[in-house]
Image 1 (cartoon, rainbow, N blue to C red):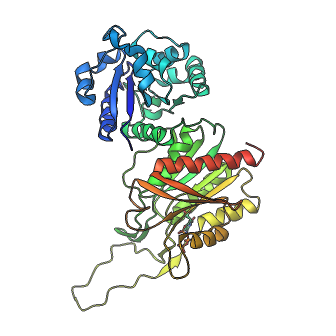
Image 2: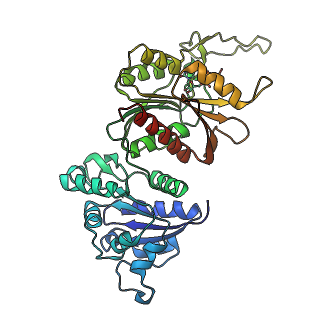
Length: 417
Ligand code: CTP
């Protein structure tokens, strides 16, 4: 991606220390980052830290370098403004249109996408004043991230934690890639997302697994949640991914556990996204103790008999068509395909789409540096109306946001959205 001008605003909360990691990640991604802390942010982290990390001087007020008119120019020239952490007070000042320091003045002059990553105590987050302020900012087109839940300052825990720096920088880069804000258009929608690979036990220490990293499914859960959906993520094995903020995560191991978790949560869901790489076969018997090799090197290796697992996607489509999932309005499948002598990637994907009967099928071509364990991807989106849309090359988060655009269109088209 080109070098973009990103303003990182930092308000005065203890999570200000996490802004240092965010600034580092954004500069390492090649962007020109300038930090605008508030006076109170500097009580938590010194200006020297932000200056060293960003390579730019740090000011809080509008009276430095006045001849350069920074209180207007910084906002006008920015490609993206990210405020992390955004305290309850900062959100209130942004809503009121105050311009009493350099950060709030910049928020008034910025015409680029603006993202707030709130961090505050749970009581403050749920106070009607903050709830109204967040709704107002979203209505005006700003992206206000859902905070994470968990340990807050002191002994408290609950909603209000700043999402991890990696999550904020991922979403910041998404806004730059999309070139527009992420709409908050899925409030009231319940989404069930599966991600990662299953592990089919052979014995207590061995399993049959696959190379899925879970990144695409996590990106789907993250984007759905940040657009307002209530998301349950059923996660198999992943490459140590950060749980997305504001998402309920259920960890499972085998295909059978994934099937049971989907059956449990699907009746509530409006949307099912099957991004998990589910094993198609599992050992018929998992040994209860570790399988030992004999001391005789000439002895044959054991044979492991395999049996088919249930097709969870096809089973969910069947259950929905039989009226067992009355809330379900969109089922999304994924297909990783290679071409062969019978046809190319799309030929196989079309056949799979017909077999599975879902509303959308996301198709990835598998090969060198594609689909598995990588950050970028491309592919096609097949829809039940016969359309085949190419998904532009970009981050898995960008791809997730395009798939979610299609899900939103589906929900609106079926008359209930
Ligand atoms: N899937 C599933 N249950 C399975 C296997 C796959 O729900 N037991 C889902 C995956 O989550 C994915 C889609 O089905 O959304 C496609 O998976 P894939 O393994 O590519 O499809 P298969 O029907 O198994 O076809 P193939 O013969 O290519 O393996």
